[in-house]
Length: 114
Image (cartoon, rainbow, N blue to C red; front, side, top):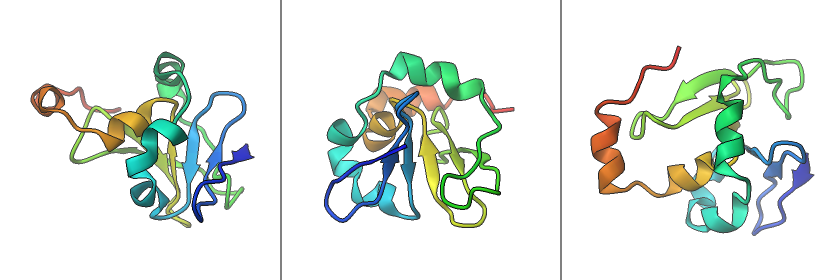
């Protein structure tokens, strides 16, 4: 993981998959700068959606829990039950930051995450 030096953020980017790790609440602070922060390839990020055994970068011993964004159910991210940090695969954070009218209608038919 490499640190993203932006504002007072201590967010990190995976050097392998370009996924993003945010400490609790940082994703809201950086949402307006999603294009600058999330530089990964969304197609590569989509390939990592099936990976469900991710260790928390902050807590180390805890495993992240698979989550679905309630406002945009097509966005699947992982969260830590202890520190409440979030991990977004490459491209997911850009998608999370911008919700289009088309996505609103597509989300009505979004598949359930299993």
